[in-house]
Length: 97
Image (cartoon, rainbow, N blue to C red):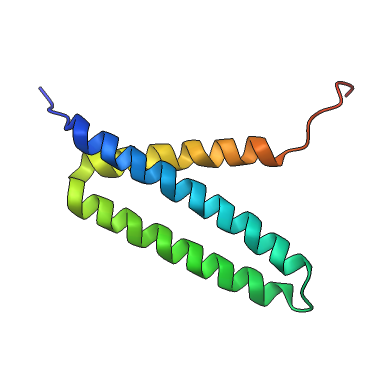
């Protein structure tokens, strides 16, 4: 039978939720900041580079500290945070097709 370390899974999930919230908050901030600049591509590129680097660094730390279960929890809750961010970013539908 496969043994799952539920504590590591929960710790990874917490780290994934926090990282996801910060990642998508950084995306929103970067887009807002880029809209007011004459060179928005430089701002968006720097924002993406920082966000992706931090995401990979935190994911690596979670995997090193908690193993596979923590990494699974991290990945699942990061994608859940992505779904929430997309739902919040979409405009509300008016009800007519």
